[in-house]
Length: 191
Image (cartoon, rainbow, N blue to C red; front, top):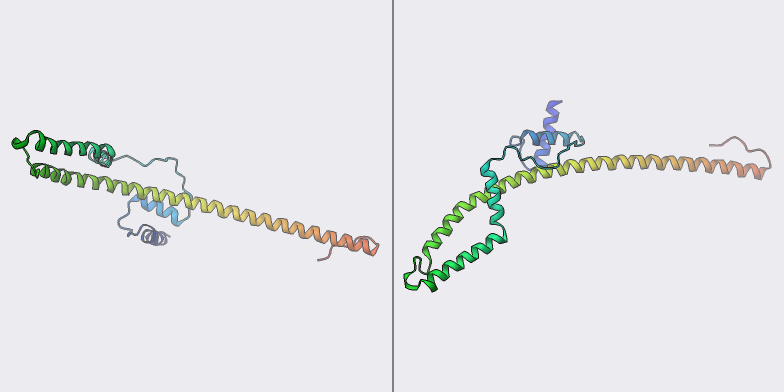
C-alpha cells in the first residue's frame, strides 16, 4: 500500500506542483497524501505558520514591504531632487558631487546591489506562503467537491423516491378508475 501511496503522491507532485517528489517537504507530502486519498482537511489554524522565521527573514520582509511603497518612492524622489538642487544650484562650483553626480550614481548602485537580494529573499518566502495557501485552497476545494457529491447523491435518492411514490399513486388511481368504470370493487394492484 505504501508503494501505491508514493505513486499517487509522485503523480500529484508532478501534475499539480510541477515538481518532483524529492523537493517536497514533509508537510507538502502529507497534504498530497490527503489529496490522493481524498480525505477532508481538518485544520483549525487559519494563519500561515511563522515558526522558524529568522531575524534576517523578518527584516527582508519589512525592507521589501517598505521598498515597494509610495512612502519610499516619495522619500527617495525628494532625496534625489534635493541632491541635484544642493549640488547644482546651491553649492555651484564648490559642489561635492557636481553634475553628472558620479558619487550619487555609486551610492545608488550599491543600494541596488544590497536591496535586490533582500527583495529576492522576501519573494522566496512569499512563494513558499503562496504554495501553502494553494495547497490549503485545494484541500478546501476537495472538501467542497466531496460535500457537493454527497448532496447530489441525496438529491438523486430523493428524486427516485418521489418518482417511485408518484408511480405508486398513478397505479393506485388507475386501479381506482378502472374499478369505478367497471362498477365493481377495485382489483389487486397490477404491475
